[in-house]
Amino acid sequence: MAEKIRVLIPEEEVDRRIKELGEKISEDYAGKQIHLICILKGGVFFMCELAKRITVPVSMDFMCVGSYGDGTKSSGVVRIAKDLDESIENKEVLIVEDIVDSGNTLYYLMDVLKKRNPAGMRLCTLLDKPDRRVKDVKADYLGFEIPDEFVVGYGLDYAQKYRNLPFIGVVEGLEEQEGV
Ligand code: IMP
Ligand code: MG
Image (tube, rainbow, N blue to C red):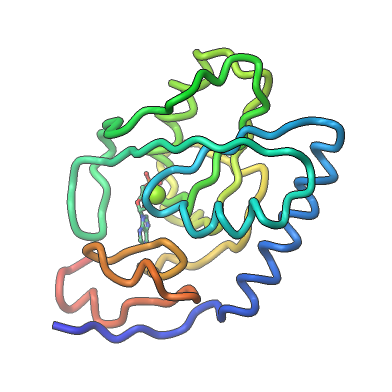
């Protein structure tokens, strides 16, 4: 069944904000090189657009983490489905994520990565749903704070659909369908 998608953040606004984040990050990391770590799959659209707006040298790596659980809720148990290809030792790591929701995924992941001795580690997320937070995770760079609604687009999916939408949208009618 096709869901209805309501636009929450239009494309132009997302693009404008990513440009601002890129400028801020470039300033903050002046004279340094940034090692971007994209959290797959959701972070991929954001990372590509962000990286294009960063003016200091960047390298990139990808990690795929998932939480056991399905639908629109995460279970809190995190598994690494694909680890990084390269060492992060002595690198200025910037994690690029689509959304921080409960915070379970990043809490776990940042703990794992810190043990690998990066020179520094910061978090950049496109979206943040603070109302849903269970673990204490704070983004150093944030695109938008959003209300507790299930969103899609710009990398975010609902049952693997809608990642390619160029805006952030809310999937309507989920409450009735699934009780989330
Ligand atoms: P966590 O609850 O902070 O661990 O978030 C885990 C992951 O759930 C995020 O990285 C997203 O991939 C996914 N997620 C959380 N909220 C949403 C949403 O509103 N739409 C789509 N995916 C979401
Ligand atoms: Mg994600």
